[in-house]
Image (cartoon, rainbow, N blue to C red; front, side, top):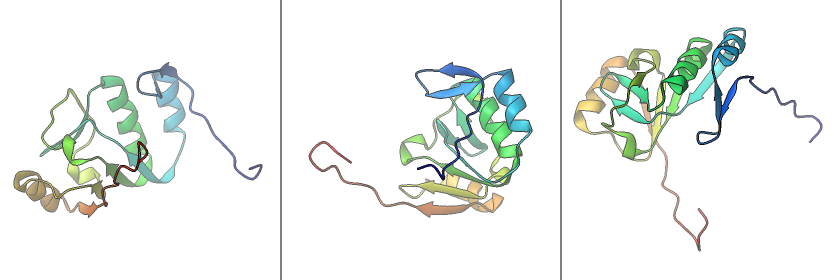
Length: 130
């Protein structure tokens, strides 16, 4: 579609993650201002979202700083999983989209921080597809 304008972020490409990171990525993101940052996480702790890769955590943190609102999208398998890159506290997040209600201790932390929890329907597998 010729009406779609694609803006690519520079940086060092991490093939396993399908993402870029590094100084060029962070410098690029610091020049942007967006309405929403929609972010993933390797783990969801009472303190906030975390990532397995420190470099990804740095990128998520930069994206979150430059957004007016922040949404984390992560399935229930991430509840309670700890990783080294803590990139935000729940006070910094507006919405968590997940597929099951969080366990009580996490739900309390989210409520205390004012995070809206939205439950997304689970997709069913149809002959090898989604």
